[in-house]
Length: 88
Image 1 (cartoon, rainbow, N blue to C red):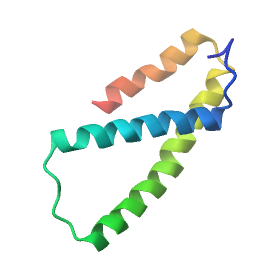
Image 2 (image 1 turned 30 degrees about the vertical axis):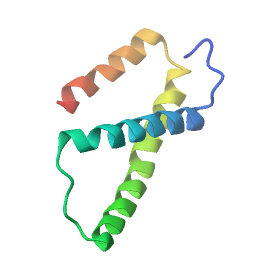
Image 3 (image 1 turned 90 degrees about the horizontal axis):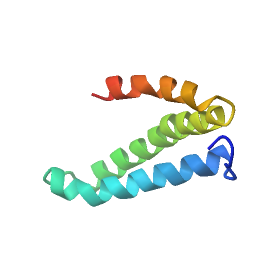
Image 4 (image 1 turned 90 degrees about the vertical axis):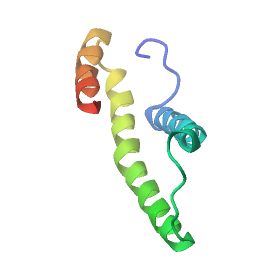
């Protein structure tokens, strides 16, 4: 990513987030039964999820992609290791 990256941080974050979204929609029906919410609840929850995801996840991934271009690969690996511990 640091030596041969031709994709700016924001499009890279968008592609990453889009892939994660599509994957989660593909696996969601197999992991849990569908909730029984009303249409108004679904719209309200959907808007909240999209806004939160766009602000928090999009900015954090864009910052990661920006920093990755400027750091050594070993340092990036060390900085990403706490993600494994915290994600558990």
